[in-house]
Length: 202
Image (cartoon, rainbow, N blue to C red; front, side):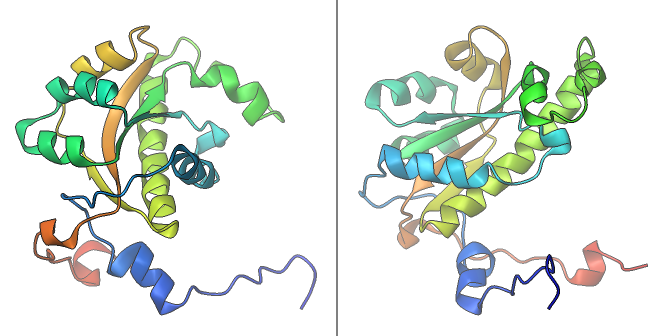
């Protein structure tokens, strides 16, 4: 095999099940704490996923203390409040509207800041799209490290932003509950589309 050839092998069925086929969105949580070190490990693993011009615009706030949960609770939809308060932590995934200031560090081989500076539509499009990607990486990283997640969008973005990002530079995208899920709270497995219904090869 020549040097530089990709030698990565497919994951085994158990790993694929943990990441995808058997993984679920959890609504109830076991009374098992998740340490700060574990939360940090998830974030550190997820940061290696690709983003446009390596911008990595996502910003994560881990809401886990009773005081922080009390600040978040009024901004959650009724259907999401109890399960979020029961989760060991809820992650606010936002995007930095000034992410371009980090580009000299993150994308040093070309000055791409002019693509974004003073261009709110480009900032929003890139920030929202890529922070959504980073949230997906975060979910997979959490699953890879043995945790469960419950992503959701039922919350008041304006209220969350005013409470947790008062300087206005970061905009919330979605929330992810994280912990060790209680299977008793799972809904029945919902169906998925067949390949021909959502994809084509041309």
